[in-house]
Length: 451
Image 1 (cartoon, rainbow, N blue to C red):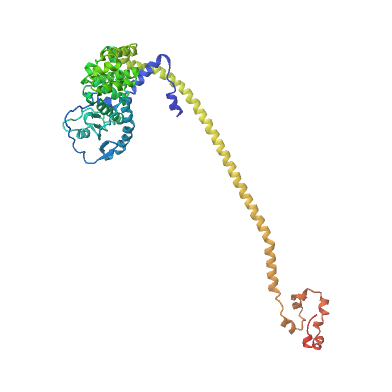
Image 2 (image 1 turned 90 degrees about the vertical axis):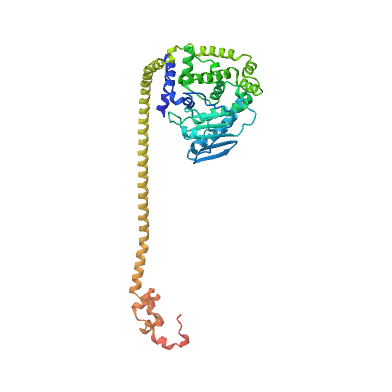
């Protein structure tokens, strides 16, 4: 991560900065160009103007239809994971687009048909009104219809379909916001507003605009009123001029005047009159001021900068600066690697120390358990021996019964030892009157009680 950050942590300043910017713009042009650029690289704009009725054929088999907030979506069921995020794009962008244009009337029901490739998009188009072969999106504003493809023609790469959707949305919203004035609005305004509202950025258009401004080959707005040129470079320039002129108006005067222009045209004013009333200047005067602004922005750059040789030379200027930055990064990387190595060694030492402590604790617990078990065995040993002795005594010296002792006149020494009296001294036993037979015979039965 740190290395990735270092790659972008400040480019060389000074005389290489401009070359760096040009070279990066050239190298990353393909990734930053909007898919609309591919769509418009060969012909007319993506707006179909038809005054009559249009006939739509049913969607092909395998398509789904979703009705959602005034919009009918038709798309292949297998493309749902691509199309469904467009629902949110529409919901988020529509209020912004309407607010920027001052559209107050409710938008008519919109139908959006999406094909997997250009051929499928053509099949979804109105009968007799197929979109241009180069298009990735086309709008039929008067019929509130939008067509999109998920694969760009020629390149067969997925287009920036979210931006294309907002671009076509702008055409539909502007058309209905203008009312009857929609058929009087120049094409450059329609496309310039759509590019602005879709937040499109294209280095190809910037390069075309630079080249046109410095070489004096800019197209006039009159030339872009009704139709764009068909040559690849010229059509890029047409879109670049349209987008830059609208952006210049918005930067200079803010969006309020654009909304006022739309309002005036909706009320029936012609475009030229509405422009004069809104900006207090004619469209020709505004164009002249814009061209002067172009000269201020691009006039200080030599022509060869925006030519192919200029881009190549800018790339050569980048090499020494890039080499120095690479060497400097090498030192930083070496320091980082040493820090990482030291950190890893410290962590390994901590791990080993923790392992030794854990092993010591385990050995101590095992030793303590062994000591406790030995103490318990020692304590229980005497009681076990006493039990064995008592059991042996009971087996070797059985208890004496009274009848046996009487049968032997109480003279059995073993019996006397086994009896309770056996614990008495021998002389006490000999003096006991119960041991004298004559004494026993002289007593009456009722008096035979030992005292």
